Image 1: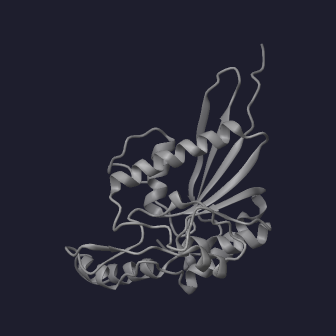
Image 2 (image 1 turned 180 degrees about the horizontal axis):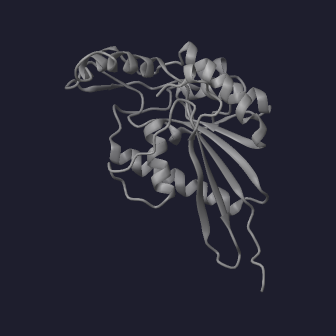
Image 3 (image 1 turned 90 degrees about the vertical axis):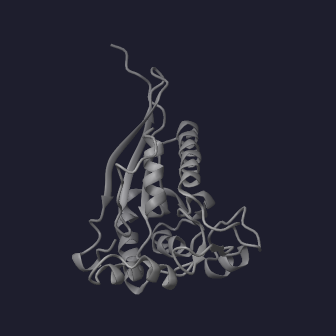
Length: 250
């Protein structure tokens, strides 16, 4: 029997950011009696939430946990909370993260004064702000006017963006010259969309890939020259071995 020659192997560790101030606000409001007060949440949330103290602790634990995974490239969305989350991991690995704009969360950077109020867009961090806060990050394609244009992105546009990212990951895997592992820190809703796109599943609400803050999902890309087909394998989802019970948040 002939053995099929194998293409280089790419492993993607897809990671959700640590707890943000908006995540904490949602948890606090959810614990109140009655229905979730969406209007109150929209009034109090901020367009560009930073990590909480607990979120920073989650990021530190993530950094030491992922340190043993031989990761050669790091990516993060341009949102503040992912750039803060990936910093301990970058320091552990001695690797400079690249900012990948299309990894941003569904909606973009916006504020809404209430459930029925129009969304007011914010530009996000500018290139000089990123350079000052995260001097070793690579932020090509981001100018002084920030990176986000418009108001609130709809879900259909988010799915379309996930398809583009999935196609780029496929290309990276096919063109890889040697086996490698990469990590990308992103956001809950976008990660759900991206996993569906990678698996060829149509957008729907009947399935959701949930991730805790700093939850890790592993996706393997492999192929053989005999089949010529790229195989995408989800090894596990939402792994949180690095978190103690008191560090677990949604």
